[in-house]
Image (cartoon, rainbow, N blue to C red):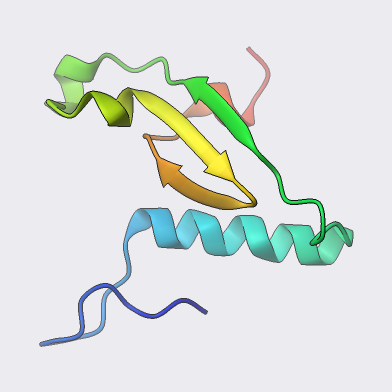
Length: 80
């Protein structure tokens, strides 16, 4: 379990930490923890809907089962 991003007044985790935790757990159950998943893709949701000014969040980057940047949507997990 990762350390929380916010400690006070209560412990809170980010969404990226949650997805990373799920990816690492899935890798352990499949038995492929040594070969981490890596992915670079764009998401399909318009940036204007999210109000994103940071262009780094336009690209979803997963490296060794850890979500580094981006917003995940159906295009990363489902068939398109």
